[in-house]
Length: 146
Image (tube, rainbow, N blue to C red; front, side, top):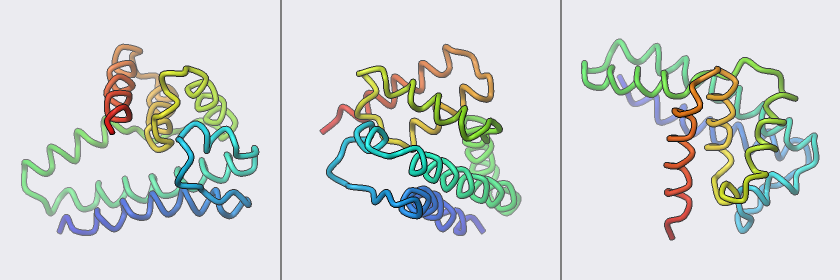
């Protein structure tokens, strides 16, 4: 039933890291999120974005398909998650630009790259700025915890 979604989540992470690795950029766990992004060349950044988008698309397709076999409560959670995490339909260049801009704010330096991709997706989907700011505030709080 809802167990395949865990496998899809793993694919998101693997896809993003594979995208960066395939372009000669090995992720270094000791680096901060923005430091990793800033040290990648454009090929690595585009590879990361492409890997992330491919894995995200697969994950969301699995969630939509698996939703029907879940309880009403789980269906509601899946629907809420999908609404809060829209698919990005922008160009790779636009996504890169949005993430570059996101990490220019010193308050975002510790926010992990997956969350930065989520913010970029929200912006590309034209979500209200207040909603995006709420998400960013939550991400900052999470990233500031030891």
